[in-house]
Each structure stands twice: as structure tokens, then as C-alpha cells.
Image (tube, rainbow, N blue to C red; front, side, top):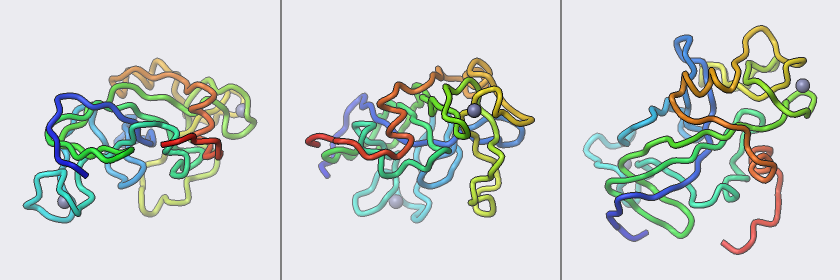
Length: 187
Ligand SMILES: [Zn+2]
Ligand SMILES: [Zn+2]
């Protein structure tokens, strides 16, 4: 990885939408921390680090292409977040780590986790994530209104609470979120 300072870089990452203190928030799919719309990275291992640091995992991590996240999708809880990264950055062949992250837009799993129909709301699935002891905030998934339980949110409400544009993922991005293998091409 080469150290470069660039004003703006764009990338993709997986996030979960969780209910945190009765408010919708984004949680990083990899390290499980709540992500603010505008955030500065800190290192969880070494207090003296100014992320990103070589040979450490600190800094906001994103992939240059959403397709390369397919292996990490945690169906049906993963959604796609487009981010703008700035400040100190480390740019790899297909990934980026950076000091600052701004969340640009959220693309939700486009199908109901239960029946496979086009999703219309985000809600708490009947089955919990199985990681409830590690991450107490419930993760939300996409569903149709027939399959929705007691608590669900319309797209507009999700966008307002998260303070960013939110839409349903396109079919190709939906496949990434399903963790469905595809021809990833040359990258
Ligand atoms: Zn570090
Ligand atoms: Zn359904």
C-alpha cells in the first residue's frame, strides 16, 4: 500500500441498519461500531495511532467496487453504503483506508428476506441475527408489508433518521447483498 494524500476518494462498504437508543443508526459490518454520517477514524488497538497506519487495520475501510464485497455479505442484514473518504489515505489495489469518512447514500437489500418479493419496508425480522449477545442492537432487514412484523420503517423514514439518501439496491447490487457468487471479472 502506498501512502498518498488525496482530497476525495469513493468506495463501498457493507453496513447494517440497527435500532440504537430507539433511533436508526448505521453499524459497520466488519467491526460492529456505530457509524456517523461524518466521522473520523480512531484505532481500537493502539491509542497513539493516527489512522490509517500501515500494518494495522485502523482507518475507515472501503472497497473500490461493490462487487468485491460479495464474499463478506451477511444475508439478510447487510446493506451497501457508498462513502467518500478523505484526509490521510492508504490506497491498495482494490481497497482504501482513510482518516475521514462521509456516508453518501445507502442501498438496501431490494427483496423481502422472507418471501422474496420486492421489499417495501425495513423492519425487524422474526429471526434474530444470532449475534445478539455480541451486538445487542437489533439489525434490520428488507421486507414486504405482508411479511412485516410489529416494527417497520418506510424508506422516507429511514432516510430522515439516517440523514442520507436511501434507495433499494439495483438487481446486480442486490446479488452482492445476497452473497451470490458471480463473475467478478478482472480486478
Ligand atoms: Zn491502528
Ligand atoms: Zn414478504
